[in-house]
Each structure stands twice: as structure tokens, then as C-alpha cells.
Length: 308
Picture 1 (cartoon, rainbow, N blue to C red):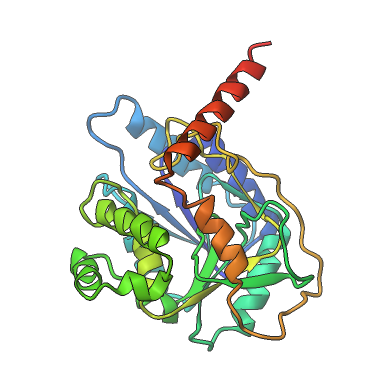
Picture 2 (picture 1 turned 60 degrees about the vertical axis):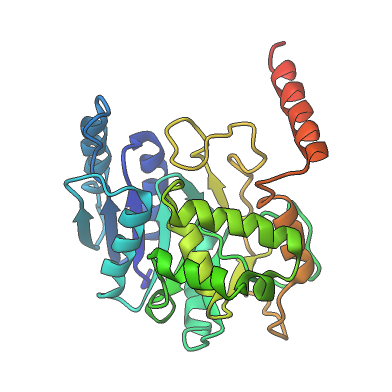
């Protein structure tokens, strides 16, 4: 495969090995490995980091391997964003996988073909194999356009990543000018994302992905999302930075394969219905009381069914 792959790793050797095996099957010509350092106050974490990094040394195909390993713990937001900035100083496009996101093999061809097709189209910020529609689809096309930049298995270009903004100052301007209302229209979505960005830029939540989302919205950028789910996130556990709900329907979702040749949409129109569903489900971080009760009963039912 001609397109470089960025592999984001930390301290989970079992998950890392599973993703690495899929990368090995794709045989990229260039592999960029970005690793964070251990936290000084976590027992055995340094050892786990070393074991995880050793997995990458098993590259057994014709491949240039570039390593960006931190000696100290930078945290998720700074480590991922600095690693991607380092990557895009060297290449103009890349496919990006975290250590807990297992792709279907068709994911690589999907990204590679669309990275080429939309390389000069400034309207598109990213391509992702993460589909959270649970079978809902409006067309027979291979993908649709969205305002959401999903990052469980994705790809982008240097031209898009140059718009990434880390510092809080950009969020302060968005608040001052009330731009979320212009972007999202829906008042509830505005309230949800205002809270998301507030906890992100205050440092309460260690997220690069929320910063990337806002950076793309401020460019009026769209993403391309596969019309079937190509990625299983196996990282929903207590070791995860931001995904620790093992009962979540997004935990280890079933992967499907895409058919080729790809069926391209005739028009570049955002799928508002799909985005509305995503906002009300995946991004329903601050549910109403009724929704909280419903979610609680679902968890009780899940645990009860697993007792017998």
C-alpha cells in the first residue's frame, strides 16, 4: 500500500498487537509510530509501554518505519496532535489508527482511493471508516458526507491538518461570537457541544478529537463516512482515556466489508438525517431525565442477563 499509516500507541500490548496484525496484512510502504511515555505515578506502566513498543519492531515487510516516542507522558491531546503534526511535516496524507481500533481490510483501500479522489477538495477534511448509524442508510452509495469528524480509523491530508488549533483562544472567540449556533442550529446540540468544548479546552477532558472537530467546523469542513461500519473499537475498558463504558453499544461494534468499485455520491450534500441521529445517540452526553432512566434500565437488564 502506497499511503502511509500512522499508528498511535501507548501501553496496551494485547490490543496493539491485534491492530498491528491488520496493518501487517496491508503492508504499507511507510509506517509512522507515535507513542506516549509512561506516567511516573502508575506502577508497571513503563514496562507496559516498552512491551507495546516492541511489537512495532516485528515489521517483516518492505517498510520504512519512523518512530516518534516520548520519554515523558504528554497526555492524549498533546501526544496525538503533536504526533500528527510531526507526520504531516514529512508526508502529505496518511491513514491513522489508534491502538484499539481494528479495521476491516477493505478500510485501507477505501481510504486510499478517496484520499486520491478528494486530495485537492478543500471542502473535505477527513475520511473515516467509523459508522454509527446501526444499519440506517438513505442511499446505496459507499459513503456519505457529514459534519462529524469520526476518528476510530480515519485518514486526512496535510492541507486539512494545518487548520488544527490546540489553544483555548480559538474556543474563547467561538463563544464570544456565538458561532456554535450558526454551525449547529439546534439549541440542544449547541448546549451539548458548548459543554464538550468547555471541558476540553479547560483541560478537564484530555481530548485532541474535540479540538479537531471544532477546527474543521470553523473551516466549514465536511467528512466522508463509510456507509457500513469498518472499525471495531476494542478499547472500552478501565485502561482507556475517554471510553470506559463496557456496556456501550459502540464497544467492539461488528465490522463489515465494502464492495468495490466504490459507488460515489452524485452530489456533495451533507446527510442531515444521519447527522441528526448521530447527535441524538453518540453525542447524547447530557441526556434528559427520561433518557437517563431509560439508559439505567438498559444497563440493569444487561447485567442481569449476564448473571445467569
